[in-house]
Image 1 (cartoon, rainbow, N blue to C red):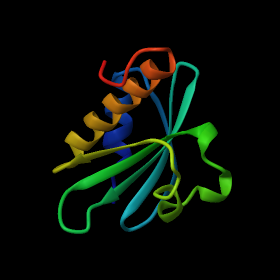
Image 2 (cartoon, helix red, strand yellow; image 1 turned 45 degrees about the vertical axis):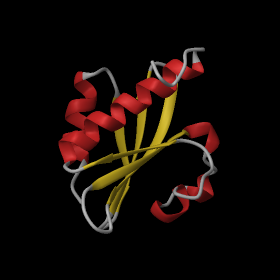
Image 3 (cartoon, rainbow, N blue to C red; image 1 turned 135 degrees about the horizontal axis):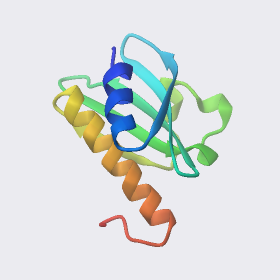
Image 4 (tube, one colour; image 1 turned 30 degrees about the horizontal axis):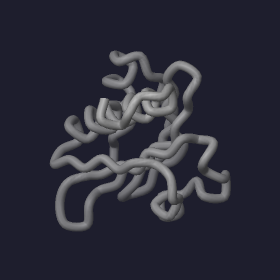
Length: 110
């Protein structure tokens, strides 16, 4: 999976900072920062088709859970699903913005 370059380019255009933490054949893990919020994002290739990400605020993820498999079991965060990589990046960044707004007191619907 080679999502980092595309993810990083689009994220920077929207004011995010991205750092790749690890990469496997079916998953990549990034740290994504915007303003004072840092998220752990795991990007996966779906079992049948498409792609998905698990997005978790850094403070909710113990370091021992920083693996593709373990992040799915963290009871916090949101998922984004898409048919292609560009759509996945856009949906993931949208969800991160929603999580930031929610932390500031807005609803997740915003």
